[in-house]
Length: 205
Image (cartoon, rainbow, N blue to C red; front, side, top):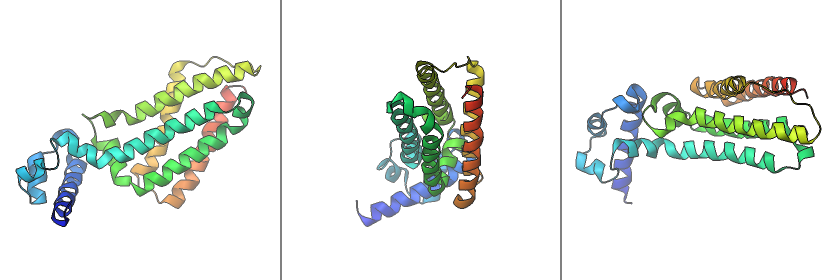
């Protein structure tokens, strides 16, 4: 890609980010984006085929990192020997969320677009998808505790969903409010302690 092409692409991205942040994906105007960027419609279509593709170019790397890192953390936890899982639960959750917090603080605009401006795209379901992963992992952990001989109370799936949604939503509130990373780290540790203790309590651990 030539210097001119890179410059044109940067103009498009800057204009698109402002338009999407102000109006959201659905109401954003491709015509306004092109006009603000100072490029022709033909020049735009030399880079992207649609508004959807442009939005994805802005947010997809951040979305993929978030979902893959969160999924990998659960998969790694589930791969541990059963007897190791209870002692590692809080620690591994803390490590994963700290990593995601660091990444999120470096990509706040992208996550703002995902969380607040993505209605009408696949990215709008990010929190719901993370909640689903959390609930599935919780069900697998119940079985581990039972195999270890623990008596695990049956928790209503609606409560599980509410708690997981609250936990993940609280995490992203720090991102949406653009909390400085050092402050957010302290808040995250407190949130992790709170939710870990709560889950252990209702699981009878």
